[in-house]
Length: 130
Image (tube, rainbow, N blue to C red; front, side):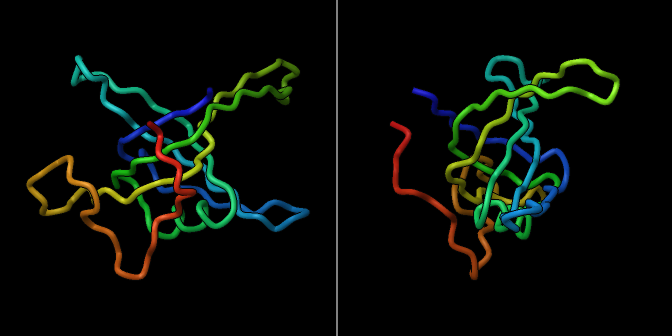
């Protein structure tokens, strides 16, 4: 089984591009996640969301916003301009949840649903990760 559940903050604004042939949206972003037992250390996870979820993330999230997501890990490789082989690891987003904005006035740092815009419905496929 290849299933990932993450919750963290975006390190910069999401980048939305559209595929040349299909016109399908591709949103790339990085999530910073504090390590459980070492608060001063973080992991930076590259994520990609396709289609409508990617467009929604791009439109409603910005640097510093908290996000919870489920997805799966995909690895790949490509040849760089200098001829070296590069390897990639990304989390492909299946569903996500709005948590809260970085500057939210909520006193509970782990509250789900805070800061959700009224006109946005989070994308989900209905699967629970457990």
